[in-house]
Structures are given as structure tokens and as C-alpha cells.
Length: 426
Image (cartoon, rainbow, N blue to C red; front, top):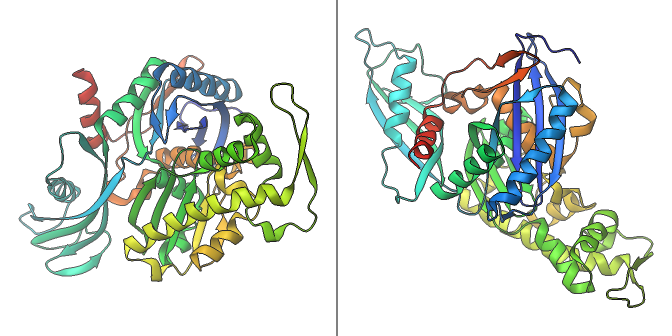
């Protein structure tokens, strides 16, 4: 695919517990998204979404991005990277400012001052703010305002959703990407990124919960009125299912993963024919066979636990009764047949498996898979930062195509620049 110099190109990098995925995408003048390249590599340098081995993570990042570069025919310079882990926390905050304009017209600068005011909250020294997402603005006591710029008023208030993470976790992600030879142009919470790829705007309006079941973490995000209302990351996910199979059947981890992917079923009641599965013996022992229903009986309890934890988080959000669109499942863990049916049973709402959508051309078929949801969401965020409302600041992102530097139109991300400052001081 021919890329013209004026096209915006963004690279999304999903550094997961079991895989590292890189996606290169571009948007044309009509804002159509084309996938130029995809790269994926096995990852064993993370535990529950947090980097625990720098060198292994660096090697996986290099492998995934190199593969994406070969597919796309571009040289990657910088990436938008996702962050997850059970260290991620969120809370509500409120701020108020007076309108600076003498004529009383609210400007973008007023909104930025207001969002900055909402971040003045007491936090431990080891935590920093990742995102500030406006939920609603209030102009002179009139609530329910979505876009206050251009309105007249004296007093401007906002309710915002603030997402924080450990400074050390973010630093380690930066270190891995930079040691791999790339720059971090922005850092985005992974469930937010996934929501851009798999949720329909109508679902966000009437109420929906996203449950992204990855390898090391399960990410939850609750939306209503086109606004994110709650986020959470829990450290029970697909790797626990694999561990259960490994222990229950006495097999190697890679064999357990293969059994889960090839023969796994989330609901034992769905099995009509209990076929035999042959398992290679360990240490020279004879092969053995198990029934497919036996495998399902190992998988189902752990998936039920994951979904029950998700149900607790949804209830904590206070929006459990507002989910008219039910639940959307995504991530590699949602690919086990029957997961949506099990989720509907456990959560008591409609459930579907979400795959990336809104893509126009290029390698669309290759990324139409729940495991690519986060990486695709990262490039959608980079190409359409307005998805976060006034909190969607755009950061610099560039890569070299042939001899020409293709730069994204940029509005430097205030929060990201603050984070970059930490690393410059190291």
C-alpha cells in the first residue's frame, strides 16, 4: 500500500503478559483507518501486567515492532504504548475555576485550567496521574454540559475521572521501549484503548461494561452517556486458566496453552460429543487421554471467578443497573468458545465478544481478533484523540517512511510531558 507523506501514521504497542503486539496504522484525508502492518511476539518478561524482566521485554518489543515494520514498509520511530496491572487505580474528582475572558466566553484555556485544578489532590509519592477524563461540565450551576467551549458563564466546574498508576511501573515501560530503540509518544490505560476498538458509540451512550480478559490482567471499564464512569484492573486472567490446566492434567505450560486454545470450552454443558484428547507423556511416560468435558470442567470454574470479580467491580461503579447494552468481552481470554454465554449467565446481562471495528483497509482481517483489541485501540486513540473528550491530548508521534519523516499533527500531551520529565531526571 502506497503511503503519501501527508498521511498520519501511528504505531500502537500492547506490551502484555503473554504477548507483545505492534500495529502500524494510517488515516487518510477522509479519516479512514488503514492497517499497514502487524507484529506479534511471545512475552515472558511481565507478570500480571507489570514488567519484571527488562531484557526479555526489550527483545519481545523489538521482535514485534520489526515484524510490523516489515509488513508496513516503514521505519518506526515512536509508539503509543499501553499500561495495565493491578496497581492502576481510579477515583472521581471535582474542580472549579472562574472564566478568564472579560466577555464571559469560555475558551479552551479555561477548560485546561479547570482540568489542571481537578488534579490537585493528595496522592502518595509513588503514584502519578495517567488520565484525566471529564465526565460533565457545570456552567454557572447548569449541569449536564458536554462541551463548554464557546458558552458564556462566570463559574466553570467539572466532574472528572482520574486514573493513576505506579511511577515505577510506567518508568519500566518507558525503559523497555527506549532500550529497544524507540520513543514513547504517549502512554494509555489499556482498557481505555480496547474500548476505542470494540465498543459501538450507541453502547457507550446507553450503558455498557467492557471486560478485557488478557493473559495477566483482566481490565474493566464502565461507560454511560458516552463517558467512562469506572475503571479497574484485576490480576486474575487467562494465565490462571492455563495454570489450572497445567496443574490439573500434569502437563507442560506450553501444552496446557495449546489444549486451552484448541480444545477449551467455557461451558461444559455446551459439549455435545465428549471426544478424547491425547496428551503427550512427561519424561518418557506413555501418552494419556482425557475427555473434552474434563478440560471444560477445569476451565469453567476459573473463568467464572474472573467474571465474578468483574461483576464486583461493575457493582462498585454504581452503574450495574444502567448497563442496557450489557457486557462486551474482548482480549485473548474471551476467545474460548462459550465465554459470552458464561458471562451472560454469571453477570445476568447480555454479553458478546468484541473484535476491533471501524477499520477501512489494509490488514483488517489480520487484526479482526479480540487479542488485537488493545493494540488497535492504541492506534485509534493516536489518530482520533478526541475520543477522550477534552482529556484526549495528542502527543507527538513520528516515524520515517523512506527518506521522509512522517509526523502526526501534534498537540503536546501535558501529562505525558510531565512523565517524560521524570525519566530525563534519572
